[in-house]
Length: 271
Image (cartoon, rainbow, N blue to C red; front, side, top):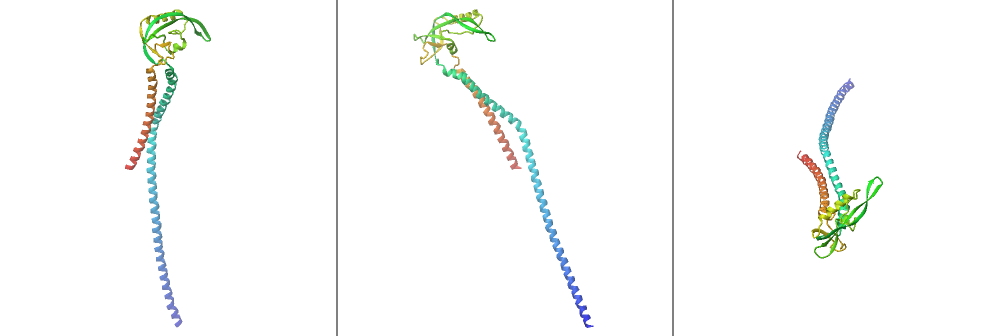
């Protein structure tokens, strides 16, 4: 009987210890599950916050890019046209400099009749007829004649007698005649033209003329210059104005682009 009682007493103790262990293990499991739930919950909430931040940043970035695209698309056509206009003006001015430099400036620089004076007409006579040729069609040239008018003058009342020519082209075409008319079929028209000039330049008439101060062309003076200082001024002034205008247009376009970018940056800082 005694062993039975002992086992009976031991069994309840073991069952009580097991119940305590199971309860403590269940509590530990609940606490660990609570901790795990808290950790996982905090992880989920942190990921959601980061996702919201990313989405908000992406929205602001999209809005910024859209505003930039709108600004660029609004300014780009006008800026392109203005830049093309400025470049076209600069290129045209450079071409004008080249053309006028070859024609006007070169002729003005090569001319030796630079000093202006006063000439007194001594006499004007028609020396002889000069042969010339005129164009009558494709590969067709016919001969004609015009009267050669010779005028002699005294330069600045110095007693030096020189032959008068109309301009540099006349001097290069004929070193003997004052004026070389355009060759025509009707010789009467050219004779009337030369007679009219002879009547206008009568003896003892004082006229302005140009002579060579270096006296390389001592025997010849000119009534007018082909290109004077006024022609040279205009040939340099207008291309310079075009060049300056084109450069100003390009500078203004670049300044507008810089100011638009600066305004956008200031607007971002205020926001």
